[in-house]
Image 1 (cartoon, helix red, strand yellow):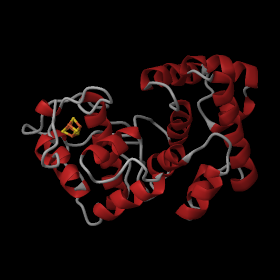
Image 2: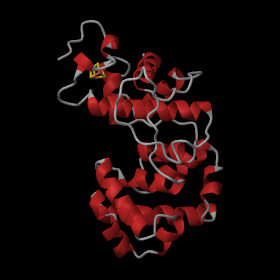
Image 3: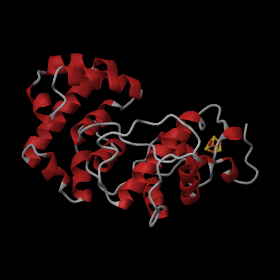
Image 4: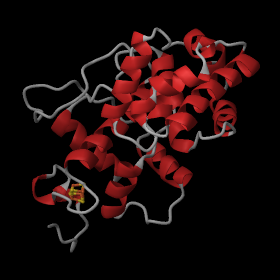
Length: 246
Ligand code: SF4
Protein backbone atom coordinates (compact mmCIF):
# COMPACT_ATOMS: atom_id res chain seq x y z
CA UNK A 1 0.00 0.00 0.00
CA UNK A 2 2.76 2.46 0.92
CA UNK A 3 4.46 1.99 -2.43
CA UNK A 4 1.17 2.50 -4.28
CA UNK A 5 0.52 5.68 -2.31
CA UNK A 6 3.99 6.94 -3.18
CA UNK A 7 3.55 6.22 -6.89
CA UNK A 8 0.10 7.78 -7.02
CA UNK A 9 1.10 10.97 -5.21
CA UNK A 10 4.38 11.28 -7.08
CA UNK A 11 2.57 11.06 -10.41
CA UNK A 12 -0.10 13.49 -9.28
CA UNK A 13 2.09 16.19 -7.77
CA UNK A 14 5.77 15.71 -8.57
CA UNK A 15 8.61 16.97 -6.37
CA UNK A 16 7.67 18.93 -3.26
CA UNK A 17 11.07 20.61 -2.70
CA UNK A 18 11.61 19.83 0.96
CA UNK A 19 13.20 21.16 3.21
CA UNK A 20 12.82 24.93 2.65
CA UNK A 21 16.20 26.13 3.99
CA UNK A 22 19.52 27.43 2.80
CA UNK A 23 21.83 25.58 5.22
CA UNK A 24 21.83 22.37 7.29
CA UNK A 25 21.78 24.46 10.47
CA UNK A 26 18.68 26.30 9.29
CA UNK A 27 16.99 22.90 8.84
CA UNK A 28 17.90 21.97 12.41
CA UNK A 29 16.59 25.25 13.80
CA UNK A 30 13.38 24.88 11.76
CA UNK A 31 12.92 21.27 12.93
CA UNK A 32 13.16 22.36 16.57
CA UNK A 33 10.97 25.44 16.18
CA UNK A 34 8.22 23.70 14.22
CA UNK A 35 7.16 21.55 17.18
CA UNK A 36 3.53 22.36 18.07
CA UNK A 37 3.18 25.31 15.72
CA UNK A 38 2.52 26.15 12.09
CA UNK A 39 5.30 26.61 9.56
CA UNK A 40 4.21 30.22 9.03
CA UNK A 41 5.12 31.00 12.65
CA UNK A 42 8.45 29.22 12.23
CA UNK A 43 9.20 31.30 9.13
CA UNK A 44 8.69 34.49 11.18
CA UNK A 45 11.10 33.27 13.85
CA UNK A 46 13.66 32.23 11.23
CA UNK A 47 13.38 35.66 9.61
CA UNK A 48 14.04 37.32 12.99
CA UNK A 49 17.07 35.10 13.62
CA UNK A 50 18.37 35.86 10.13
CA UNK A 51 17.85 39.62 10.53
CA UNK A 52 19.71 39.51 13.86
CA UNK A 53 22.51 37.54 12.14
CA UNK A 54 22.35 34.66 14.58
CA UNK A 55 21.02 31.92 12.30
CA UNK A 56 24.25 29.93 12.59
CA UNK A 57 26.01 27.74 15.12
CA UNK A 58 28.25 30.65 16.13
CA UNK A 59 25.28 33.01 16.29
CA UNK A 60 23.20 30.80 18.59
CA UNK A 61 26.24 30.14 20.76
CA UNK A 62 26.93 33.86 21.18
CA UNK A 63 23.44 35.29 21.60
CA UNK A 64 22.07 35.56 25.14
CA UNK A 65 19.23 33.27 26.11
CA UNK A 66 16.96 36.26 26.81
CA UNK A 67 17.58 37.73 23.35
CA UNK A 68 17.11 34.32 21.72
CA UNK A 69 13.76 33.96 23.45
CA UNK A 70 12.65 37.29 21.96
CA UNK A 71 13.80 36.27 18.50
CA UNK A 72 11.92 32.95 18.45
CA UNK A 73 8.83 34.27 20.23
CA UNK A 74 6.57 33.91 17.18
CA UNK A 75 7.09 30.14 17.13
CA UNK A 76 5.35 29.65 20.51
CA UNK A 77 6.78 27.90 23.61
CA UNK A 78 9.63 30.31 23.03
CA UNK A 79 11.38 29.78 26.38
CA UNK A 80 11.69 26.03 25.85
CA UNK A 81 12.55 26.40 22.18
CA UNK A 82 15.28 28.97 22.85
CA UNK A 83 16.71 26.61 25.45
CA UNK A 84 16.53 23.67 22.98
CA UNK A 85 18.57 25.65 20.46
CA UNK A 86 21.16 26.47 23.12
CA UNK A 87 21.17 22.81 24.23
CA UNK A 88 21.71 21.63 20.67
CA UNK A 89 24.73 23.90 20.17
CA UNK A 90 26.08 22.82 23.58
CA UNK A 91 25.75 19.18 22.49
CA UNK A 92 27.42 19.95 19.15
CA UNK A 93 30.35 21.63 20.90
CA UNK A 94 30.75 18.90 23.47
CA UNK A 95 30.34 15.81 21.29
CA UNK A 96 31.38 16.96 17.83
CA UNK A 97 33.78 19.87 18.39
CA UNK A 98 31.15 22.34 17.18
CA UNK A 99 31.15 20.84 13.68
CA UNK A 100 27.99 19.80 11.85
CA UNK A 101 30.14 17.95 9.29
CA UNK A 102 31.65 15.82 12.06
CA UNK A 103 28.26 15.28 13.63
CA UNK A 104 26.67 14.12 10.38
CA UNK A 105 29.62 11.80 9.67
CA UNK A 106 28.48 9.75 12.69
CA UNK A 107 26.69 6.48 11.79
CA UNK A 108 22.93 7.01 11.57
CA UNK A 109 21.86 4.83 14.52
CA UNK A 110 24.49 6.30 16.81
CA UNK A 111 23.69 9.89 15.91
CA UNK A 112 19.96 9.21 16.20
CA UNK A 113 20.54 7.92 19.72
CA UNK A 114 22.55 11.01 20.60
CA UNK A 115 19.88 13.36 19.26
CA UNK A 116 17.11 11.47 21.07
CA UNK A 117 19.00 11.85 24.33
CA UNK A 118 18.61 15.65 24.09
CA UNK A 119 15.70 17.08 26.03
CA UNK A 120 12.79 18.00 23.77
CA UNK A 121 14.07 16.13 20.72
CA UNK A 122 11.69 13.30 19.86
CA UNK A 123 11.88 10.82 16.98
CA UNK A 124 10.18 13.07 14.43
CA UNK A 125 12.55 15.99 15.11
CA UNK A 126 15.63 13.75 15.27
CA UNK A 127 14.71 12.08 11.97
CA UNK A 128 13.95 15.41 10.26
CA UNK A 129 17.44 16.59 11.29
CA UNK A 130 19.04 13.36 10.09
CA UNK A 131 17.21 13.24 6.76
CA UNK A 132 16.89 16.87 5.76
CA UNK A 133 20.00 18.42 7.29
CA UNK A 134 22.34 15.41 7.12
CA UNK A 135 20.97 13.39 4.18
CA UNK A 136 20.91 10.24 6.28
CA UNK A 137 18.69 7.45 5.00
CA UNK A 138 15.85 7.62 7.48
CA UNK A 139 12.16 8.36 6.99
CA UNK A 140 10.33 11.03 9.02
CA UNK A 141 6.95 9.92 10.39
CA UNK A 142 4.56 12.75 11.18
CA UNK A 143 0.88 12.97 12.09
CA UNK A 144 -0.12 13.21 8.41
CA UNK A 145 1.77 10.00 7.59
CA UNK A 146 0.02 8.12 10.36
CA UNK A 147 -3.42 9.42 9.47
CA UNK A 148 -3.18 8.56 5.77
CA UNK A 149 -1.71 5.11 6.44
CA UNK A 150 -4.32 4.35 9.09
CA UNK A 151 -7.20 5.40 6.86
CA UNK A 152 -5.83 3.19 4.10
CA UNK A 153 -5.48 0.21 6.38
CA UNK A 154 -1.68 0.06 6.25
CA UNK A 155 -1.11 0.58 10.00
CA UNK A 156 -3.31 0.56 13.04
CA UNK A 157 -3.63 3.36 15.55
CA UNK A 158 -1.46 1.58 18.13
CA UNK A 159 1.59 1.28 15.87
CA UNK A 160 4.69 2.78 17.43
CA UNK A 161 6.72 5.46 15.69
CA UNK A 162 9.52 3.10 14.64
CA UNK A 163 7.10 0.46 13.37
CA UNK A 164 5.59 2.99 10.99
CA UNK A 165 9.03 4.30 9.99
CA UNK A 166 10.34 0.83 9.19
CA UNK A 167 7.18 -0.11 7.31
CA UNK A 168 7.59 2.92 5.03
CA UNK A 169 11.33 2.39 4.64
CA UNK A 170 10.88 -1.26 3.64
CA UNK A 171 8.06 -0.44 1.24
CA UNK A 172 10.12 2.20 -0.54
CA UNK A 173 13.18 0.02 -1.10
CA UNK A 174 14.27 0.41 -4.71
CA UNK A 175 11.69 3.15 -5.45
CA UNK A 176 12.73 5.80 -7.93
CA UNK A 177 12.95 9.46 -6.89
CA UNK A 178 10.00 11.64 -7.85
CA UNK A 179 10.27 13.67 -11.03
CA UNK A 180 9.89 17.44 -10.93
CA UNK A 181 6.43 18.91 -11.49
CA UNK A 182 5.53 18.93 -15.18
CA UNK A 183 2.63 19.67 -17.49
CA UNK A 184 0.85 16.49 -16.39
CA UNK A 185 1.14 17.00 -12.63
CA UNK A 186 -1.68 18.81 -10.89
CA UNK A 187 -0.83 22.34 -9.82
CA UNK A 188 -0.43 22.40 -6.06
CA UNK A 189 1.32 24.86 -3.84
CA UNK A 190 4.84 23.60 -3.01
CA UNK A 191 7.93 25.13 -1.47
CA UNK A 192 10.19 26.96 -3.86
CA UNK A 193 13.36 24.95 -4.55
CA UNK A 194 16.00 25.84 -1.96
CA UNK A 195 19.68 25.17 -1.40
CA UNK A 196 18.76 22.26 0.87
CA UNK A 197 15.98 20.79 -1.29
CA UNK A 198 18.35 20.72 -4.26
CA UNK A 199 21.31 19.31 -2.36
CA UNK A 200 22.84 16.07 -3.68
CA UNK A 201 21.76 13.02 -1.68
CA UNK A 202 21.45 9.29 -2.17
CA UNK A 203 18.49 8.03 -4.12
CA UNK A 204 17.13 6.41 -0.92
CA UNK A 205 17.21 9.64 1.08
CA UNK A 206 15.75 11.51 -1.91
CA UNK A 207 12.82 9.06 -2.00
CA UNK A 208 12.24 9.47 1.77
CA UNK A 209 12.47 13.23 1.34
CA UNK A 210 9.82 13.17 -1.38
CA UNK A 211 7.52 10.72 0.38
CA UNK A 212 7.43 12.90 3.49
CA UNK A 213 6.68 16.01 1.41
CA UNK A 214 3.88 14.18 -0.42
CA UNK A 215 2.32 12.99 2.87
CA UNK A 216 2.37 16.58 4.12
CA UNK A 217 0.68 17.76 0.93
CA UNK A 218 -2.11 15.16 1.10
CA UNK A 219 -2.53 15.62 4.86
CA UNK A 220 -2.76 19.39 4.69
CA UNK A 221 -5.02 19.71 1.69
CA UNK A 222 -7.16 16.54 1.69
CA UNK A 223 -6.79 14.22 4.66
CA UNK A 224 -7.81 16.51 7.49
CA UNK A 225 -8.57 15.08 10.90
CA UNK A 226 -12.25 15.96 10.96
CA UNK A 227 -13.39 16.12 7.34
CA UNK A 228 -11.25 14.25 4.82
CA UNK A 229 -11.89 15.32 1.22
CA UNK A 230 -11.74 11.86 -0.31
CA UNK A 231 -13.91 12.79 -3.31
CA UNK A 232 -11.17 14.87 -4.86
CA UNK A 233 -8.10 13.25 -3.30
CA UNK A 234 -5.63 11.46 -5.60
CA UNK A 235 -5.64 8.52 -3.15
CA UNK A 236 -9.38 7.90 -3.36
CA UNK A 237 -8.94 4.82 -5.58
CA UNK A 238 -6.67 3.29 -2.92
CA UNK A 239 -9.21 3.44 -0.09
CA UNK A 240 -9.92 -0.02 1.32
CA UNK A 241 -13.10 -1.62 -0.09
CA UNK A 242 -16.14 -0.61 1.89
CA UNK A 243 -14.54 2.52 3.31
CA UNK A 244 -17.02 5.32 3.21
CA UNK A 245 -15.61 8.56 1.91
CA UNK A 246 -17.45 11.72 2.86
S1 SF4 B 1 -8.59 12.22 2.04
FE1 SF4 B 1 -9.50 10.18 1.87
S2 SF4 B 1 -8.59 9.31 0.01
FE2 SF4 B 1 -7.29 11.05 0.64
S3 SF4 B 1 -5.71 10.20 1.93
FE3 SF4 B 1 -7.36 10.78 3.28
S4 SF4 B 1 -8.65 8.96 3.53
FE4 SF4 B 1 -7.33 8.67 1.73
